[in-house]
Length: 147
Image (cartoon, rainbow, N blue to C red):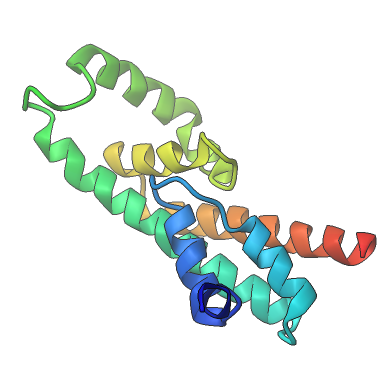
């Protein structure tokens, strides 16, 4: 039953979505498994996985936009000084760092930071779309070469 969900397009979408949020997980193994055992075309798999992953990053972005409104609370995870340093760093490098949104460990916090720093939503979406889609295209390309 679990394999049926994971090996379905909605399952791939959900796995890709949640793996792009701050929750732990990855979608690459399911993506490549589906490429080898399902009849779906590589283009379909890339589109579904990319769309889910992009929307997960968009959720992180809006979480960051919402979270910054709580910066005056004791439990807020960043001090005013570290937030100021982060804003300076992000204004210099952050927008291009969004191209690293596909990377494990650092990618998800970058997408939250983009929201906190109020990066243009449309620029964010464009860069995340490029990042996530190219990652899945490279994965499927390498898979086709090696298998």
